[in-house]
Amino acid sequence: MVITKDSLLEFIATAHRHTYAAPKEIKNKYKCKIPIQPGHKDYDFIDGIWRYHDSYAGRIWAPGKEVVFFNEKPVWTMSYQGKVKEELPWTMSYQGRTEKGLSEEFIENMYSFLKKSLMNFDDKQPFRGPPEFREHAFEYSFSMEGDFSYFTGKESITYEGEEVFFQDVMGCLIK
Image: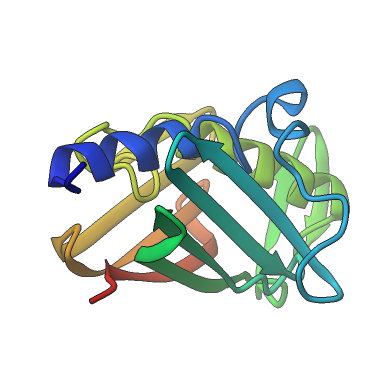
């Protein structure tokens, strides 16, 4: 079997539907009980001769890396890093309360929104979420330059127009 662009993108889309952003009952099947590196969270998804592995650490600053294997040979990778903007210089209203910065409850809701965004990707570009996605006062955006073979990108979440989260992303074929 030869790897084609379509087969690779189809597998990445399938893997993303079963791991980090998937509903809990699905992703828990693929969450590694023992991470490869201490302090990380890992997902491993296998479909025939394809394998996907995602590993990340942290919560507020949470860099990670995805690798796709074909016949156990690494063929594609994507790295991401960014952060929740903890030090926001503004007071916000959230669920009827006024807060300075971001509460733990807000961060939980923001990550829930991120997961919804990530599950709304386009199958032809299944790397992160769609170019734009909105729900209530949250707005997600993802832009990239390049294609599956080599790209850089940025994703961002705003709340009431203020950026509260961002990640830089880069991916490429492994040759």
